[in-house]
Length: 155
Image (cartoon, rainbow, N blue to C red; front, side, top):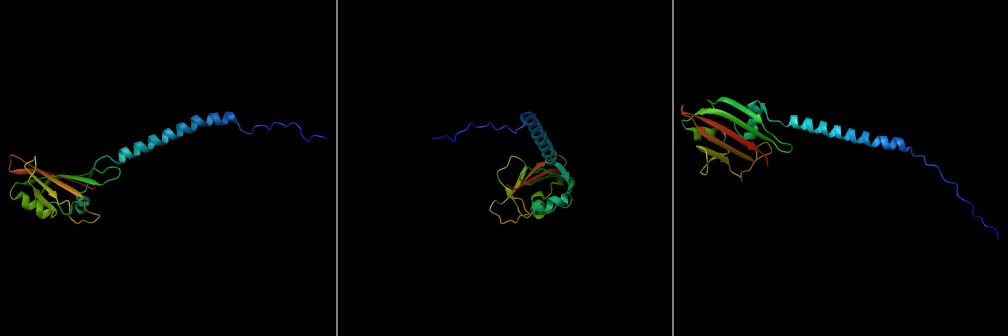
């Protein structure tokens, strides 16, 4: 009986190992610089920046009260949320009434570390344009004015 066995001829590798080895640090460097660019863009894009107060009004659910001075509105959004702040000065006279007239969602809060605080009702019906939470803190000044800070954001 004759055997059909014959020795196998080794197959030569077609992989160019020097190129593969050189590609590993190249790809790692490209990924590193891509992540660095991504972080830089988002760090600058998400920095708080001043905006026109007309942009904040639909989010606040009202408009700046008449007589407000030194008005500064800021977009303080994060990566996945929307948030605005507003700072302005108003005369102290009938301040709570003026603020609730300008922002009808607000109610005076009894627990407050500032001179006056207002919040929205947490159970209120809202649309997608309104903030889910809005807080107003008032600090009285000596010259019969008040500094008002509004912070509003979506959770």
